[in-house]
Amino acid sequence: MKNHYHIPSPEAYTEACHQATKSPHDFWDTIARENFEWMKPWDTVLEYDLSIPEVTWFKGAKLNITVNCIDRHLATRGSKTALLFEPNDPSKPCEPISYQALYTRVCKMANVLKGKGIQKGDRVCLYLPMIPELAIAVLACARIGAVHSVVFAGFSSTALATRINDCDCKMVITSDGSYRGAKTIDLKSIVDAALLDCKGVETVLIVQRIASEITLVAHRDYWMEPLLALASEVCAPEIMDAEDPLFILYTSGSTGKPKGMVHTTAGYMVYSAFSFQNVFQYQEQDVYWCTADIGWVTGHSYIVYGPLANGATSLMFEGVPTYPDAGRFWEVIAKHKVNQFYTAPTAIRALAKESLALVEKHDLSSLKVLGTVGEPINEEAWHWYDDHIGKNNAPIVDTWWQTETGGIMITSLPGITKAIPTYATKAMPGIRLALMDDTGQELTHPKAQGKLCISYPWPSMARSIYGNHKRYKETYFSAFKNFYFTGDGALRDADGNYRITGRVDDVIIVSGHNLGTAPIEDAINQHPLVAESAVVGFPHHIKGTALYGYVSLKNAAGKNEDELRLEINDIISLEIGPIAKLNKIQFTQGLPKTRSGKIMRRILRKIAQKEIDNLGDISTLLNPEVVQHIINNAL
Ligand code: WT7
Image (cartoon, rainbow, N blue to C red; front, side, top):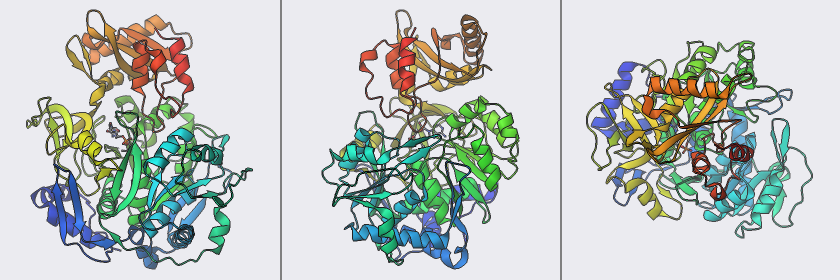
């Protein structure tokens, strides 16, 4: 396969941006035609009406995404490793799965699903650990036109049941359990508990992973392996329409009910593949590693679909960054000579707290590109990543995007466009960004700060919220007419680089001044003893709202807390101004986080506001135990 959409130089980037703006239809038409296999070409590239909103890419085209991710590589890359599985336990063998082997395993599993009555359009819930069967199940669904809804296997049974019911899944694929560092987790009993409330699920398929004793419910539960052993190795790809749904993925919203974002087939395929190639500058022999879980959109687009559509080798890691020690990421990079490494700022900050010896004992010289995603990366973490992991020799791409956008929207291109610490920098070709003020006007000066919107459709945008198109319209297309509203704030410098300032709901007004939490946290984090921090507002009799900082320390042995408070406020004064000084600083052992690593400011805000009997559901947090500790020590 020849790859025609590679942007190899600054000139090519400028040219691509120019083409995509001048004639977006031609731009995407060429990319789609030259780089993918279609069963039938499209009638029109793009039709849209953002007032409904309705967006149709590649109308009338027929395809199957798995043909593009697997079948078409077999002739030239059949023996190339598609998925490289690194297990939780480093003493266990890793498992390379070639494109040929992936083809067979996907076809077999697809036939198992068919055998259990799954048809095109049916929803299948995947509740699996990071084992090859998760990627294979994703592709098996796509092979037969079933819509996968992957639920991160760290969610509770209640959260799982809500997601299964919301989109009426007929089947759940899970495992007997999972390994997570030194622990094992009994996934099957979580599924059993969830299914007490899910009447629509007819079949549960169970992959064996930890060989634990489980109970099978008759006529509902089946071990996967014996069914695979009997399944045929041939499964013709279902012929899918460009706009047939490919998957549903839940993301949290401002209300308690999660939003099932619906992604469709052709546009998502084109954009995830195009962005993967260019953001990571993948070359044929490279080993690429994204540490996300396939339970999040990052794993969908940049472990499975984007890399495989490019015939890449994508490493899949079952474990955690701290097992058997906090050098595991660096050990895996050295072991597999990883060339592109993509992770989250929260992981970088956590690992930067550890001894540098854990980094230095591994040879990281294979690294060519480093990536981050999920939240703004603070300056200190950025430099630590650059200095100690990339050795100032592997460009960092700070990639801004969302579950809703399906693919990376703002980033630098490594070695091609300039990276700037704490800036995601520039839009990908074809992505039209806009900043809006509070009156709904677009800010047209180059240098501006406002609410981040996108003013033109892009191929991988979510098309709806499952079962609730009205909420889709209200959430994303109502704040600003004819714009997609991201929910984030951003500033743009005079050169057109974007810096994400955080969710707009995290803005705090202190004495009438608009303060973002992110820059204050950046300042706090510059203190050498600070590991992480979060700033929220609380009512104050003079300022209206004052600032409450939660600060987790690296190692504060022997330090006087009041002295530390003064030092932190001095840094804030220097960086932002006395107005941004914190009224209260509470030192904590950690900060409550979502499973994707985002700090749960909502909870911290409530504690700061002394509303502790109304914290909401904290069961889906990564670390619910820190909440009580913070309450006990609240100021
Ligand atoms: C929100 C989307 C995209 C996959 C993971 C998260 C924040 C994401 C960045 C970044 C600053 C970022 C935004 C966005 N975010 N990437 N590089 N810099 N903020 O997906 O759970 O849908 O979250 O994550 O606030 O809106 P998600």
